[in-house]
Length: 245
Image 1 (spheres, rainbow, N blue to C red):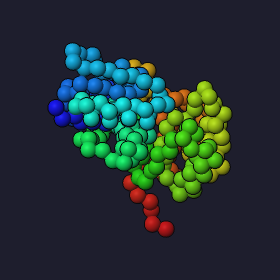
Image 2 (image 1 turned 90 degrees about the vertical axis):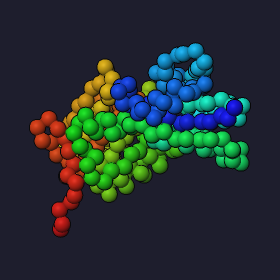
Image 3 (image 1 turned 120 degrees about the vertical axis):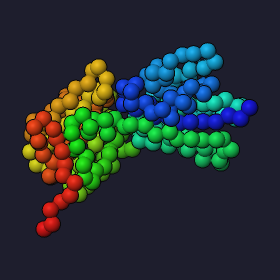
């Protein structure tokens, strides 16, 4: 039997936002590997082995998938959102590189990111040039986070932030807000989108002057507009272009 690995994005939370391609891969799988809450989203069935694991063992998870596939298993590694956005696709290729390559059949199955789902709920805040920044310092120093944040703000990008504030580093998001106020001014619009597309969803848009660190947690995606981002009724949008000087 020939094994394969699919790295699949489960989307931001709502089952309706899981793509048919991902659903088909899960239907064929013999094994599903991933972080505990993501594996919990996959319905058990006969012939399917579920392998939940902790959040910080991505390379071990990837190695396990490669071993299973080499033995003939059909493996789906699940991530939330899109697997290529701060998720398991990169970790799998790190494991492949560490082994000097592999003959495994690997497919990356895209999903709807929390960033894009949050933007859709708010309107169109990412309608022009934008960037995404992971604010966690687990895999990079916070000084680099600050550097990238400041330069993105100076470049007038709209911005999407993942992992803004955890119990282990509650003070860092306060520093992020300070930098944004320094670079963007107090009136820039910022949207806090928590648990988007789930029953716990909460969307709130305020100015940077009104933003407080406790408005974000690890289930929140934070969207910051550029200089042209504006309100129209209850919606937030960023115009598609910049007027010529």
